[in-house]
Length: 140
View (tube, rainbow, N blue to C red):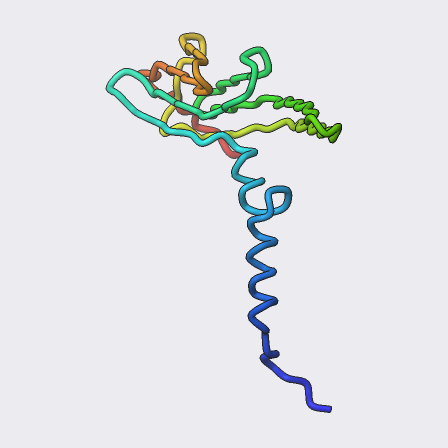
C-alpha cells in the first residue's frame, strides 16, 4: 500500500485544532494571561515601565533591577465559591507564579527606582544612569 505524502485533512479536524488552540486551559489565551503586558517609555532622564497585572495583591508583586535587567514577578491567587438557588455548587481556584524579565535599553540607577500599583497597573520609574560602566578584560 502506497503511503501518501500529503494526507487529506478533513475540515472537522481543522476546526478541532482551532478549538484546542483557544481552549482557556491549554491554548494561547492561557499563555497570554500568565505574562504581564508591558509598555516601556523613555524620557530624557528616566525609563518608565507600565505592567498590567490585574487581580494581584500588591504584597505579592516583586520588582528586581540589576543594571539594565528588570524582573517583575508575582504570585496570583484567586478563589471563587458560588452556590445557586438549586443547590448546585461551583468552586474554582487559580494559583500560579509568574515572572517577566526585560532588558532595558540602558543601565539605570536601581537605588533611585520607584514603583506604584493602582487599578491593576504596576508603574515603575527608573532613573537613567548617566554613564555606563565599561570594563576591558585582559586576556591571559
